[in-house]
Image 1 (tube, one colour):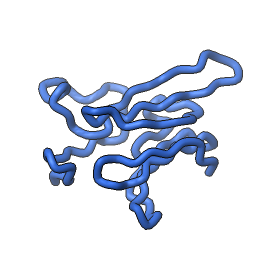
Image 2 (spheres, rainbow, N blue to C red):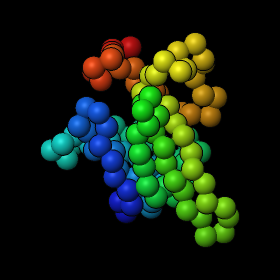
Image 3 (cartoon, helix red, strand yellow):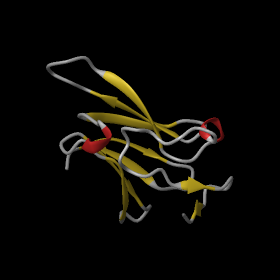
Length: 107
């Protein structure tokens, strides 16, 4: 693992980008791995930094030596702006659903 970026979501969990494995992982405040939010199957490249947007989107930057750098936006939490839209056709990691207080809603 090569941690390259970190942010904290509204529930206090740590969101960490791993440039070596092209993943974004979520850890509890005590450091326990909770889930893998983004993986290479989600079309993630060498992720560098991350942020959580106002509506719960996960925003990551990617660095590439041989190609263009880019910014990608993923549905990290369920949000009102996508409530009527289907899930991503590329994304393989399920998007968790949360209530207005940031608590997980069981599927």
